Image 1 (cartoon, rainbow, N blue to C red):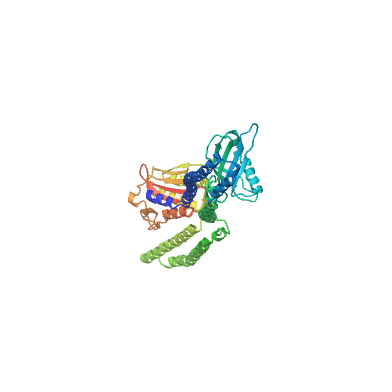
Image 2 (cartoon, rainbow, N blue to C red):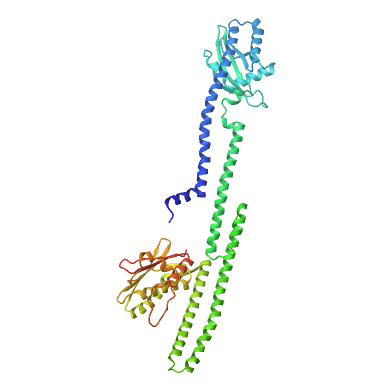
Length: 500
C-alpha cells in the first residue's frame, strides 16, 4: 500500500490540481495588480493635479494685478500677458461680469491660444456646456482650484481640456475670473480623471495576459480531456466493445504516437490471447492422442501376461497410473493456458453470482454430508458480477473442494457472499488445521499442495486449485487472499467487481 508521502506526491502531480492552481493564480494576479495599480494611479493623479494646479495658480496670480487697474487702454497689455502665459502650454481665459443692476453675463476679455471671433465663441460655448459659468454665477467671491474636463473644441477634436485653476477676482467694477487649463494632448489632460485601465498600453498588456491565461489553461484542459478519452477507451475495451481505438479518441497531436502505440499494444495482446488459446487446444489434442493409444494398448498386454507374473502386472499398473497422471497434467496445463489467456482478454458477461453459488452450494451440501461435514450458506441475493460462469464455478468448486479436503468430520464449512463497496466478496471458511501466517501468500503459488497423499491416490493433486482461484479472480478484475479463521482453520476470500 502506498505511503502517505507517495499519495501526497501523486496528488501534487495531478493534472486537475495543477489546472485548479493555475486558474487560481490567473484569477488572483489581476486582482492584486488592479489594487496595486489603482493605488499607484491615485498617487500619480494627486501629484500631477497638484503640479498643474500650481502652474495654473501662478498664471492666475500673474494676471491678477492687471485686473485691479484694468481700463480699455490696458486691454493690449492684458492680452500680451495672457499670450505669454499660454506660450508655456497653458490655455488661459479671462472673463468679466460687470457689476450692474439686473442680470449680467460673463464676457470673454482675453483668451490664448484661441484667436479670432469664431474660436472665442467656441471657447465660451464649451465653458457654458461644462457648467463652470453657472457655478461662478452663483458665487463670485470664492477662490477654489479644481480639476474639470471640458468638452473638446470641435466635434472632430479628441479629448478635451483639464481645468486646473479657476479664480474669481472681485473688484468694484465687477467680477473677474481667470481660467487656466491644460489643453488636449498634454500628459495631465490624458492622465488625470481617466482610469489607468483605459490606457492603450494597459489594455494591450491585459489582452496579452488574457491570451496567455487562455493558452496555459487550454493546455491543461486539452490534456485532461484527452486523458479522460483514453480512460474511456480503456474502459470500453474492458467491457468488450468492438472497434475501440485510442487514435480515434485522441485530439492532441503530440499524443498521436502514444495513442498509436496503445492501439498496437491492444492488437498484440489480442493476437497473443488468440495464439495462446489455439496453442492450448492444439497441445492438448496432440498429447491426448498418444495417451489414448497407450491406454488402449494396455488391455491386450494385461490379457497376454499371466496373472502370476507379478512384476509384469505391477509394471502395467504403474504405466496405467502414469498415463492417467499424464492425462491429468495435460488437462491442468490446458486450464493454466486458458486462465492466462483470460487474464489478457477478460470475460465480460453478466453472471448472477448469488444464484450460481446457491446452485453449487446445494450440490456440495450433499457431498459434505457424506463426509460428516456441515455446510452453512450465507448468500446475499441479487449480486451480479461481470465475468464468466465457468471461471466463477471453478473458483467456487476449488474453494469448496479445498475446504472439504481439510475439514475434519463433525466440523462445519461456511460459504459466505455479501456486498462490500463496489464489489461482491466471497468467503469460504473451514475448521481444518489452517496455514501458518508466513505461508498464507505461498498457497496461491502454482504446484503448491499440502494435502496428504492417499494410499490409493499417489500424487492425486497438482497444486493448482488455489492458483486457479487467484488467476480466475484477477481475470475478472478481482483479487483473492487468505487469512486465519476466527476459530482456527483457513478462510479464503475472493473479491469481484459488481456489474454496472
